[in-house]
Amino acid sequence: MALETVLLVGRPGDEGHGTKLAEAATDIAKPANARVIVGQIFTDDEYENALASLGLTDEVGDLSAEIAREHGIFSSMTAELDEAGVDYELRTAVGQHANSIVDMAADADLVIIGGAKRSPAGKAVFGSSTQDVLLEAPCPVVFVRRE
Image (cartoon, rainbow, N blue to C red; front, side, top):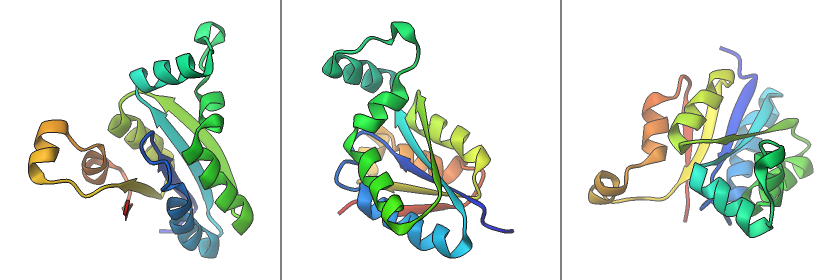
């Protein structure tokens, strides 16, 4: 199987981790000459909060791409990819993190996702989007742990 497309995912909460995620994507995608899809996922609440904090309204349509460009994780990932000369495109989605990531992964040969170590009790109480992606993605997943 040739590696043609890598999905690099960012979510609110991944701020400060974007460079490390993009470095992993570069290390994998550049030697394979693969294209990277940089995906930013917002839950409905995250999207509404971002609209409010930026003083925007979505009456004209989905503004998730504009919000993502203002978001720290997105800009740090694209800056790293630009510096490395990696071909990429930007995609956004509004919905549950795990489901949206798995849907985006339909177009990918590999997913790169970040996350933090959580206790079994923490996963049981709060769920784990990263774990759901690891188990449900239609392609291999690389996990980059947040320090």
